[in-house]
Structure formats: structure tokens, C-alpha cells
Amino acid sequence: MTMPFDALEIPPTALDRGGVEILRAGIVEGGLHISLRRSFDDPQAWGIALADIARHVARIYAMETGAAESLTLERIRNMLDAEFDTPSDPGSTTAIS
Image (cartoon, rainbow, N blue to C red; front, side, top):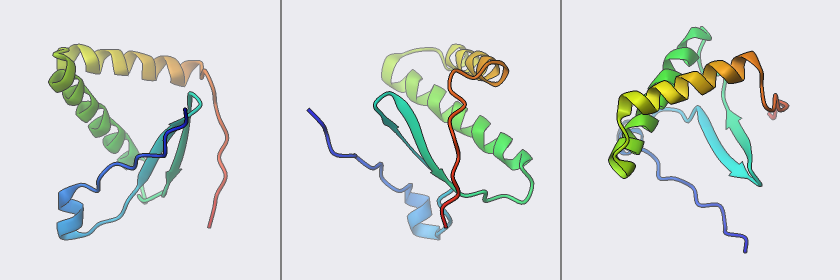
């Protein structure tokens, strides 16, 4: 049974203060599909954004499963390092205007 794509809600602060969406991601048939904007002049800012995302993921796991944030963050970091070293799927990128 195929379910319709269930988009997440826009963060309340983004609705109140405006801003720009930088990343949208979905899993389709087990694969990651994303849309993104370059967004930052300095690519190091993406490192900060991705680290912030990982911390949010760790908090959600803690809230929903009781897993320790620190352990979840460590597991994310370990897999991130492994994926950088040996990608399981390098994927492809297409620019869409």
C-alpha cells in the first residue's frame, strides 16, 4: 500500500519571522531524495547546520525512545565518518532552476 507523502509542518518561528527553506528530504523506496539550496556563501556553515540537525535527531530519539542523546549522537557521528570514507550510495545531483 502506497501512502501519500506526508510533509512536515513548517517550524513556528519560520512562520512568525520568515526565513528560507534550505533542505527538504524524503525516503522513497529506501533511498534518500532531497531538494536543497546552496544557501550559504561559506560551505562551512553547512557543517554547523548538519551538526545542529544531528543534535535535534539525538534529542528526538531521546524523547521518543529513551535513548541517551550522547550515545545517539556518537552513533550518528560514527556512521557519518564511515559514509564520508566509503559511501554506501554516492547518489547523483541535478540542479533545477
